[in-house]
Length: 208
Image (tube, rainbow, N blue to C red; front, side):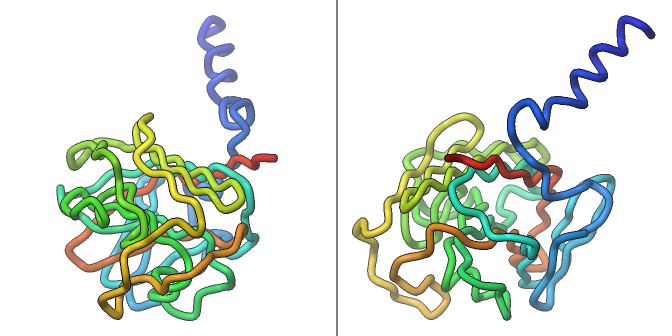
């Protein structure tokens, strides 16, 4: 037991050592607010998408320059979800995040503009790195001024700078084109009843 104690203490200190602050406490949705008909449940220390379309956002503060780290797994190969960033204000409905923020896609079945790591309909991925269903993925989203960098399982899959050329908006559900703020709220999307995604970590590391 004596030899194990230092290891356990070291493991407990890891979140502080790497500079990431957890936004999810593993017990309940304290600090989070949900909009839309879908919902999130806490199950075995994880946040789980339930039901239809929805947006769960962290309502306590906005985030500027930082790295958002999300550890997730999908229950099926084509489960659809996303991490919403740069939300200028508290969203009144779930589509607000898609239209007025950026949705970093979670969906292994989409094309390059709509696959995991893409900024939905705005900036496509350069490679596909999501693991099969049931395996944990680590996504890190670096927000630094007008630049967004997305790393999936240790591989940079997307880098977008405000003002870069984007495809024209064709459908009502695609995001409104135009600049996003350098700071904003962050959230998690619940897409549809057939898409189940589990999140065991959502944390933020401030950057200068």
